[in-house]
Amino acid sequence: MIRYTYDTNQIEIRESKNEGDVTFNVIVKTDDMRDRVKQLRAFFEENNDYTDAMFYSHQDGHYEVIVRNNNYLIFLLHAFRFRCLESISWT
Amino acid sequence: MTNQAIFAIGLFLLTYAFIISEKIHRTIVAMSGGLLMVLFGVVTQEEALHHVDFNTLGLLVGMMILVAITAQTGVFKYMAIKAAKVAKGNPLQVLIYLCLITAVASAFLDNVTTVLLMVPVTFSIARQLQVNPLPFLISEIIASNVGGTGTLIGDPPNIMIGSAVPELDFLAFLINLGPIALIILAVTIALLALIYRKDLKSSPELQAKLMDLNENDEITDVTLLKKSLSVLGLTILGFMLHGVLHLESATVALAGAFLLLLLTGEHYLEDALGKVEWNTIFFFVGLFALVSGLVETGVIAMMAEAAIEWTGGDALKTSVLILWLSAIASAFVDNIPFVATMIPMIQEMGSLGINNLEPLWWSLALGACLGGNGTIIGASANVIVAGMAAKEGHHISFLGFMKVAFPLMLLSIIMAHAYVYLRYFL
Image (cartoon, rainbow over all chains, first blue to last red; front, side, top):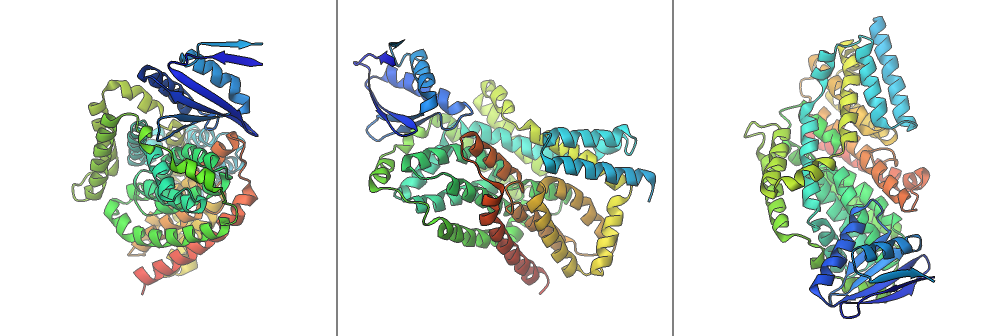
């Protein structure tokens, strides 16, 4: 089981499981965090895997990120790397 | 026939067989074939290099650099999401709009680059609507080949023909092939919509979610976007005027590419050069060297003589032969090596008595570009999309693609046949 934490003053993350993937609804609260999420997005959009993590930007400014099940951990690790998350642990 | 000619034919056929078998990467095969022509003394290195068409290579490299930089602005994603929203998220209408964007972009960039840009955003839209991406991908392949038919820079066969025949400039391609490409595109998209109408269903909730997407957020760098689009516009204007200005198309494309690099700064240089598909460039080099062996040993001249004998030197019959032969051949083998072989053959026909070669060139362009739609291995764009789809777990089978695309390809060739007859021989 993977657990992660984030700074709720900067970002809000809701996660829901689908059949073959996981959807993260991400509400960004600061410009600094928006830059980090954009870096995370650029990382996944520039690699050669087109469906590992798909980012959708919505009108109200929130992001919807659909992550393939086999990329779940990789996505979280990179979210941590770009400091969108504060901690990540296995329980 | 000399021993060298027999050797050249044998080496050519062997190379072709390896390209078709796809056991070894086509670039390695073509370069090996070309080098063996030199190593065995069929042609000297100088003769082989003389046959390498640097205008084709320069045009491809220039456009690849331009598009690589422009793609970084997110403009292609913006256009695709905007189109999906204009279609109100209706999957069938989204398919139609994505086909139109693919076709237009293919005509003015080139179809290989276009599909590379369209496939990722297609996956994204299909997932959002929870529909199978394959109908979109197959339709985009077909639209890219049809769209690319309409201009000099749209499809590798046209680039090669335009480069080999200086009097056929960008405007000549647009005037002669543009109208028929438009007609074929309209018919093809209508039929694709009919074929896939039952496969593309989504829920109102998912469509509403798609309508809520913010396409403006896809633009990553507004300043770069303005520079890229301005230079791209200038380059296309340059293509339209290159005949009048007495400039080769490669000069225009490379001038555009390096003007953009001048404006954007050197930090884009390495990335842009890294995104040039050097595989494709060396594939062309190998093929030109390979075909040089057939030209220098007189094999191409013999083939041209045989074709003229068969058609009695009649321009209409020869055009029809070239159109259908190119279409069927291009459906089953890569159209680039086929066109590389046909160009010197048609040039030879000019010296054998056919006075007006223009309908023959248009027949070759129509046959090779549209014929590429026949099978999944028919054109570079098809192979690239199939590879990208397979990597994401969506297999486009040879027969599955052929079932949809081959009848559409035959229909497009029938339409092209009627067009060539009505426009050049009536």
